[in-house]
Every structure is written in C-alpha cells, then in structure tokens.
Length: 403
Image 1 (cartoon, one colour):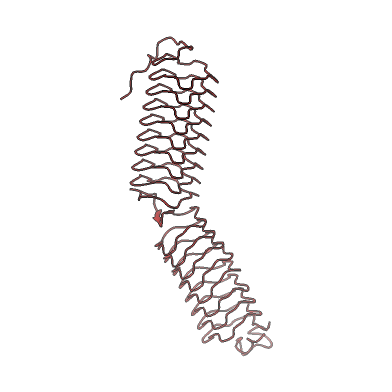
Image 2 (tube, rainbow, N blue to C red):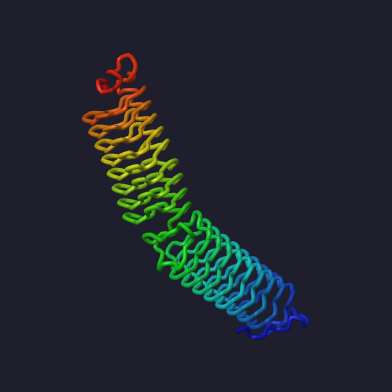
C-alpha cells in the first residue's frame, strides 16, 4: 500500500525538503539531498540528474518520469516508490531499498544496483542493459519483458522472480539463485552462468540446467565444468565450449552445429549420432569418445586428438584430419569420402568397410591398421601413388602403405 504522496495538482515548492513535499517538475539538477526525508513527496517529472540522494528517504515517493541520470542514490530508501518511466541511467543505487517499488518502463542502463533490495519490485519492460546487479535481491520481482542484456547478475537472487520474455543476452548469471524463477521464452543467447543455485520453474524451450550451468543454443560455456552432464538430444547450436570440461558427457544425438570446441576436453564423451557439422575444433580432445554415426562432414579436425575414439559409421566426408592422431580408433564403415588425412596417425585403427574414395592418405601412418573391405577409388596412398593409377595395388592402397 502506497503512502499518500503530495497531490499531483499542488503547486511546487522547489526549495522544500520535507516529507510529502510537492516538487513535481522541479529542476534539482546536481542538488545535495543526501539523507533528506522526502517520504511520500511528489517528484514526478523532476530533473534530479547528478543529484546526491545518498541515504535519502524516498519511501512511497512519486518519481514517475523523473530524470535521475548519474544520480547518487547509494543506500537510499525507495520502498514502494513510484518510478514508472524514470531515468536512472548511470545512477548509483548500490545498497538501496526498492522493495515493492513500481519501476515499469524505467531506464536503468549502466546503473549500479549492487546488493540492492528489489524484492517484489515491478520492473516489467524496464531497461537494465549493462547494469550491475551483483548480489541484488530480486526475490519475487516482476521482470517480464525487461532488458537485462550484458547485465552483471552474479550472485543475484531471483527466487520465484518473473523473467518471462526477458532479454538476458550476454548477461552473467554466475552464482545467482534461480529457485522457481520463471524464464519462459526468455532470450539467453550468449548468457554466462555456473554455480547456479536452485532450479527454475520454467526455462525457455530447448534450454536446460546442467551442473549449475544454463545450457542451450548460443550459450557462453567457456571453461564450463560439464563432465558427465546429461545433454542428450540438446540443441547446443552456436554455443561456445572453449576450454570446457565435457569428459564423459552424454551428448547422444545433440545438435552441436557451429559450436566452438577449441581446447575442450571430450575424453570418453558419448557423441553418438550427434551433429557436429561446422563445429570449430582446435586442440580438442576426443580421445576414446564415442562418435558412432555422428556427422562430422567437412569438419576441420586439425589439432584434435581422436586416439581410441569410436567412429563407426561416422560421416567424415570432406573433413580435414591432417596430421591428426586417430590411432587405435574404430572407423568401421566410416564415410571418409574426400577426407584429408595427410600425415594422420592411423596406426592400429580399424578401417573395415570404410569408404576412402577420393581420400588423401599421403604420408599417413597405417601401421597395423585393419583394411578389410575398404572402398578404394582415386585414393591418394601414403606413398603418394593413386589407388587406381600407375603404382597402385590393383585398385587399392594395401600394397602402398609404406612411406
């Protein structure tokens, strides 16, 4: 319940510094109002840009449409204040109390709200881009359709908060509490997370919470600890897994198209039937991973490790495995049509019934490899000869595996 503010129609006394003062439309730019008691005052439309309101009591005050750009409001009391359409861009609201405040359509771009209390505040459609809400308490707050792009939300509390349709593009939610929060249809592209506390009541379609991380298409999961996480059939297209720990992760049937897997550790991961087309690899460890039936067509796998990997029926057509270690890997019935394998280590690999038509095996090591039923057609052999040309071994490379 709002305390009565100064009547909207009352004439303004711009020098007043008392509760229920009528300051509507006043020019208070740069004014020093630190610690003043302006409880219930009417400051609608006032210009308070650059003003010092640190520690001021503005409980139930009317600041509708007021301008507070760059204002100092540290530890101010804005409980139940009316802030609709107010402009707090670059304002300092650290430690302030905005419990039950109505801040619909408010502009809080680049504002500092660290450790602020916004429990049950109404921030629908508010602009909080690049705001710092680290440690803020937004329990029960309504942030539907709010824009929190690039905001610092580390350690913030969103228990039972409404974030439906909110924009959280590239926001940092690491260590935040999302217990029973509503994130239905929220935009999470590029969001950073980790150490998330509690499970949201609703997440956007195709997003999930795993090992304390928000995981979905376009997520920022650099360095994420997702070992043994269950991500089967997940849509992870365009996600950034640079340096992530995905050892033993379950990625069966997952969509990993256009993902960044630079330096990621996928040792022993289950990637069977996953779509890895156009994924970016460099320094990626896929040793002993299960890639049965996976789509790696045209993938650039240079600099990756595939030692002991299972690649049965894997589509590697047109892929680049130059100098890659695929030793002891199972490539049974793999599609290696047009695959670049110069200098690759295929020692002890099982290539039974693999299709090597048009593949380039120049200087590849096939020591101890199983070549039963391999399809050879215009294949470049390790010694540089063609399987079908002069020096070929009856249409195969089986007699030309020595460098």
